[in-house]
Length: 77
Image (cartoon, rainbow, N blue to C red):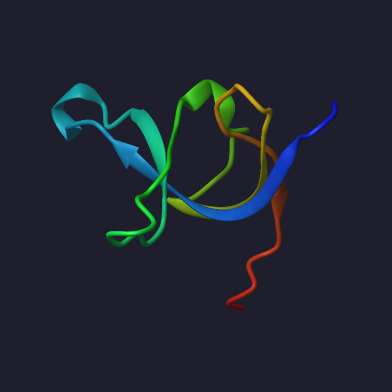
């Protein structure tokens, strides 16, 4: 796809209340400050993975929303 923008993000799982089963509600990027607000991802835009956080290569078409396309190894290990 033309003009596709890609970036690497650390995505963090955001869960609902434990009494509701603690299901995943959405994902957000790590960090964020006044200039760079966190980005939010729907559960349908992120492949399944184990754990609470993981690194992903993400893409965004010119007039679309970010979506994770593949998981990357953890650079902090």
